[in-house]
Image (cartoon, rainbow, N blue to C red):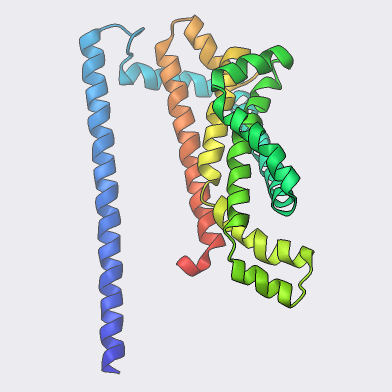
Amino acid sequence: MKEFTLYKNNLKNNIKLVRNILRGDKLEVTLSCVILLFLWQIIALLIKNDIYLPTVGNTLQSLTDIILQERFYLDVFFSIGRSLSSFLISLLLAIIMGVLACINRVVRNFFKPLNTLAQSIPMMILIVLTLIWFDKDNAPFIVGFMITFPILYESVLGAIVDVDKGLIEMANIYKISLKDKIFKIYFPSIRFRLVSIIAPTISLALKIVIAGEVYGQPNYGIGTMIQVEKINFNTSGIFAWLIIIVLISILLDISQKKILRSTFKWKR
């Protein structure tokens, strides 16, 4: 009984310690943001040129004006839609091709040069080529797919390869079907590997899609509006859109943490 009480007290102390650390982190992050905003405002006032660096007040005013525009939600919706579509299609094909590559050596060798090529070509060249080959509305989505697919494919293939060989041998001894191997052995390993890179990969897809929109200028999209602000020399508008992009990325990060908590309950 005494040992249990000591264990319980130690557990409470550890929980308090973790909470204090988290509170300290939040305080430091908040302080860092305040200092950066203060420096931004001071430098902007010293430069006295909104084209080079707008003040915090002008940026917030531009942010308000952008949000109040009728097309704002359409621009955000289309950019996020293209990003999520490119990610989900990449994810689906990465899982299918990763499993096939693990089963079939020909498929694995076929994708090696393609992945190396896709990862080696600079993003801007891919954007230019897709704008030549496809229309301006589909080019950003295709660029997002071409960048995210190799990342997800390599993660899926790595997850399958890293599966415990002893577990596979045991499955072979007990003559477990290929279907059960895939869904009960390989898929949990794939999920474990992918869940930690979901938010970063979606954020990457969002940035790539927006970059494609800046150059392609589809009818709706965050990148299209950034290009419009650039043409009008409205730097405060560009900064406002950057804030919106950062907020979207933060929401994606929060979503990833919720997915992690629901997927790995044993970590709680």
